[in-house]
Image (cartoon, rainbow, N blue to C red; front, side):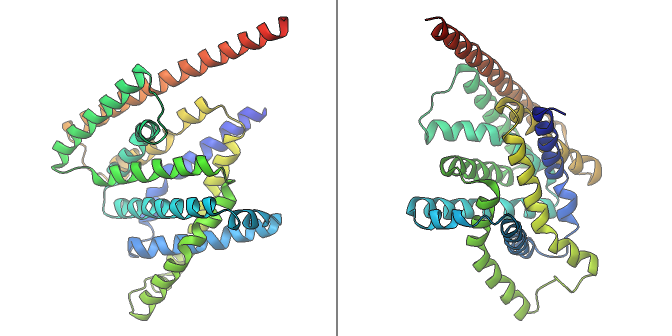
Length: 306
């Protein structure tokens, strides 16, 4: 198997795991979203610490702690991913799996908007078209829900902002996850301590199966992230861009086919517009990547002939 094909396999596996997360997090009830989040943070720190110890890779901490900009960036990233995880768990366990899927469908469009507003990037005409159609879709879905689809918007905004910060810091995935989880670990531990003291904790009081699944949340968090990182090193950016739609498609299927969440005509129309926007966005990205590759090849050829 070629290196690129292996990368696609890693990436597809990561997105399939993320796609079936609704099933996993629903199994963690009756724990509250905050209790699930706190355990996810604690066990992520524990699992990644074991992994880094096995690899004997702790030198990055010294570099990070000596760089105030990185400390601030990691803290901001930790806050954003904490908001994202909490919102997702709440959405899944309040029977809004379809809306969480919408959040990850519109994330690429939010990332483009962040590029314009924060990075001062200039969009191509087709990118503006995709963003405009995405905005119309959100308006239709707002009318259908009778409110803003706030779970979807918070998921897209938090993960889009998190991605932007991560891109600027360029920390390796395992190290980044460890530090971000470690930042959240103290409040998570404090919350779990309070929950146990007040008798509100479900962990250890439901069943052995429930306890095992809660302990496994660290592995469930880290493994797809590491698979994604392995894919990112082997697969072209355009390929990763297409793979990213696997997870929300599977999440949407879980919401409709397994949990029988409603999909009235207006909501379906809103999702249809989102898919049109993503098709335009992806097609434009593929065309732009091919044009750029061709121009680079021509430039290298011209340089070689001089």
